[in-house]
Image (cartoon, rainbow, N blue to C red; front, side, top):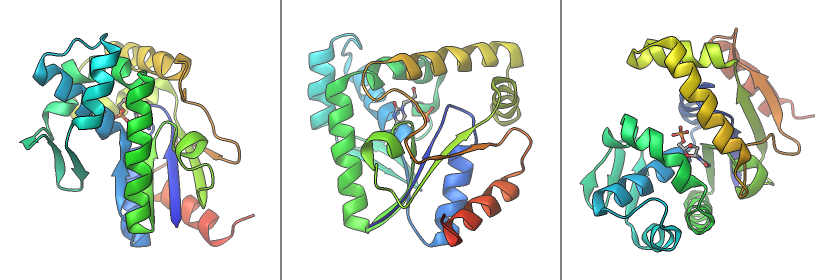
Length: 212
Ligand code: DC
């Protein structure tokens, strides 16, 4: 099984890099953040309070999720756009902190990779917890300001507000008890602040071709 794990905080360029890398390597790509967003969407849709950890855990085990290049389908509903809404973005950290949800998502992520013989998988705990034996573990980061500027270029908004929201989400993702966002042992840290996508991709390809 050949897994390339790409972790790091929001806005570090993980999705763009992971998608392009998967294409170049002829592997499939999995966005695990979209899975946590999809569970959050399902909870909101069913009216389950996000702080009801037992019900949310149960929901994560029964919900039908399809996450792929074409989009995200949750219990038969196309939620591709809604999972990126401000409501879901503001609520997802609470769901991602639920240990039952994490156990279920980890199992689904491992099954996904098993069936495909690997893939390029992006998230927060992929190299540290889900696939500690990945062929390559990358931790992409960038300054909060650069990450906020990238988000503004994509979706608009006020750069100071977005920088504050990014910092708040980083803080809750890094301080939760279960699988917090952190650099995995053996991961290679790439600060993408001043780098183009092309520069990041060629650095990664160099690492894959010439492992230490
Ligand atoms: O990458 P993203 O912004 O779509 O992630 C959404 C949320 O899910 C974010 O709060 C971090 C969390 N997440 C996680 O806890 N573990 C992962 N493997 C992926 C995302």
